[in-house]
Image (tube, rainbow over all chains, first blue to last red; front, top):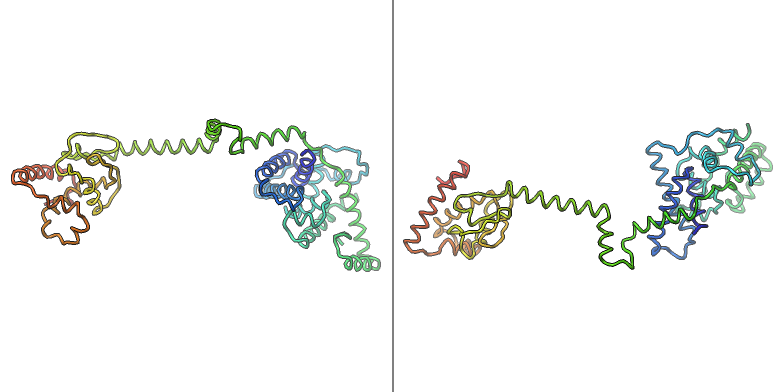
Length: 163
Length: 240
């Protein structure tokens, strides 16, 4: 359970960029998993099913946040983001708040769907097929969302890491 | 350009590589994309610190215990207590109790029809009076007659007890029912056979034979009753 909890938290954290909200989503996801275990289709990988629940809850949170016009964190210094993505030493540890700030700065302007596709594919390292199965989108739709997200990120990230 | 090798088909990838090797603009653009990819890979390798798994597990178990409809090992009493402890259930019970109390209060305040001569036979749910009923409603089938007659009039509904039977009739039109009964009695011989067939109890009551003495007493009683009733009934609805 600890391992799955870690996966669920990582996705929720990267999508929501807020540690407390991510914890809430993990908690809510596991309650949903428990209450709908009888409906679990064993032909689907458990992690796919779990990611599906987590991402749908994250999607709802992002939409609510968008409606309310609230953001989870204050703006982050671009130089900090540059240092996070330029530093090649994986041993260097950042706090969750710093990481959340960096991801938020990169992805905050993305629409919820693109953001989730990007996080699952580029930050969680799932395959396009897995992302398509989790979000119940066609593979072409996943690719289209990826293209839009990466194009947007390239435009914003390259100036920061070039400075 | 924004899709990786494993995201493109083999032919698409070959086509891209061929174009990339000849187009300087795309090659420059692609270098930027590669730099972005490297940056994203570094970001991907920086995993957030997961929360304390025991604390999360505890929170989940506590939530599940609350959500759980019942505990397999719990007794019926425990289940009932647990069920009653749910805020929604408590809210619903409080609402139902408030509704019942309010209904009794309203019925007691406004629902009691006080008609002289009849208050002994017709009692509201709230007042629960019981004593000797008034003459023409003491028939064994009086409640049926009242129900039957209530179909002729309209208005707000209320509960009344007639000769020990609970009937739901029009409380505002008790007076109308009595007046109607009197009018029907006077025209009983002219009523068509269909009426007799449709309202046998009422017909029996209307045509009940009485000896002269009993009839006199009844008429006398009814005359005074009608006079008293007339005082209670709005001017336009009174019997001339």
